[in-house]
Length: 363
Image 1 (spheres, rainbow, N blue to C red):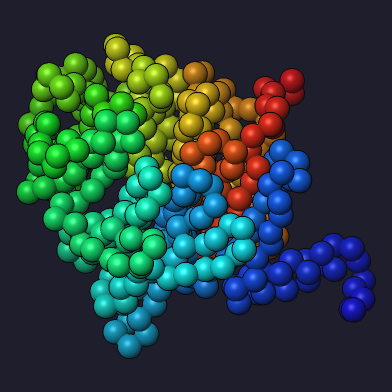
Image 2 (cartoon, helix red, strand yellow):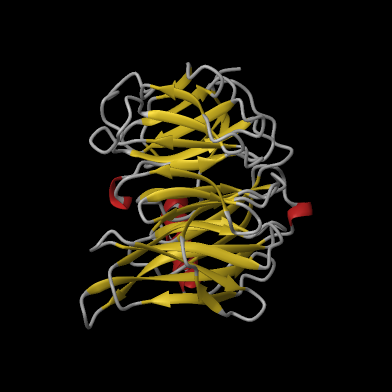
């Protein structure tokens, strides 16, 4: 017991102690069924020196994979580490570590059956990417022959980068479609649609052999079904800030986002700009049913938007505890029940998302 001069001072001291304990391995845990919509279900922390780089939620919603930077004080470099966090117990387990070079983890995802975790490690010095998969039951790590960019759970197709070419591979491992992509370090974002039927691709202005900035290709026919100028109304000639592409579940909308450019929705059929969100968003995620878009503002909070219109909705999600320096990552669980948020300096906060009623601001 300790007394403080004000309620605010007492609350801030408690938040600091809780954060320190979470870095030691403790976690805040609540039963999802007994938690009100919008409340925190799990909160934990990793002792990351550069915050959370990426994470992914297991298909059953019970495990979170977290990538973080780890310092190599001998070589004065920053390596990477991937941990899994059991959201039922708070237990953490390191499944991959690379402290030997400057590296960062991205494109992290669980396989549809939940048995493996796949992620890509980028050498920040050379720009080269290598993909790895971890068998969760055994902890065995295997390097993949190609750089993985995503996976489709329906058709078993995957999007890979190989010899400066984007390829869509079928379940048998053979190529369904090859697209020239240019140098890996200069290639814009790419995405496979939920059915595996379409591929979306953004070209950087100084690294393309086409008149189009945005392209969508039909994997089955090998034909380009859409070519359009870069859709952002501002900085339309500069796609360097683009970091993520996502198709909605209907495959009628392509969402493009980047920290410096905001976020926009583009019609898959016509290439027309449907809506824009002009804000600095560290990360965005589409809800499994495709109706909501969660956008983590760099300085917080996480704002939920109507995916059809880009209209911001209330309430928003604020990470409790010590103030965040900035937000990094946002992700939905496969069933849409949970929303996970990662912030610097290394916290993971999981909210209950299902059952929450959203309204327009002031409505």
